[in-house]
Amino acid sequence: MRAVRLGSVSTAVFVVSVTLGFMSLGEPSPCMAEGETDEEGHGPSARTSVVTSQDPSAHLNYASILFYKGRRLLQSGDHEGSEAVFKEVEQELLLAARLSDNDTEDLRRRLLKSQCAFLLGDVYLFVFKDRQKAKAAYQDSLGHFPEHDGAREALKRFE
Image 1: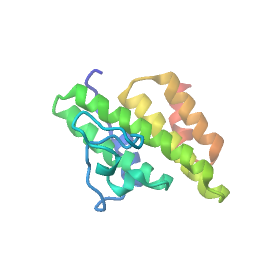
Image 2: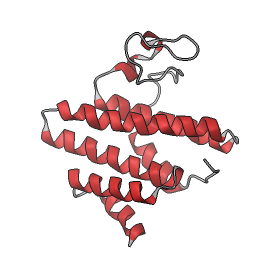
Image 3: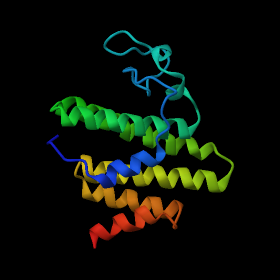
């Protein structure tokens, strides 16, 4: 991963969905299966309650919090560390979208899926520099909620 400057667009997008003050940023992977451990021997029980939640908005918020950790690492020159964190951001957003499939309230499900796709688009575009994935994510966002102005504006970058 090469160094990138994270502009105000991606930063502002994540500010909107961040809820701070209720969790720590522990290192164990939030995607560990029961019985698995990380390199330091931490299992799923070492994770915070937020990342083990089946609530998709908890994973969306966790992804937003991780985003800032990745940005800090990138700014400090830790490109390998930041790449790992941004990959975790991607996985948390994908997990949030998948968990929202269980939501029986249509509007809430569509809004969450739309926002996850939009944020993925920003991660793909501004962090991983993958324009094809970014465009597909922005289109997916509009597919879930056509009124998402951020996704509509983001797609103008591809015209």
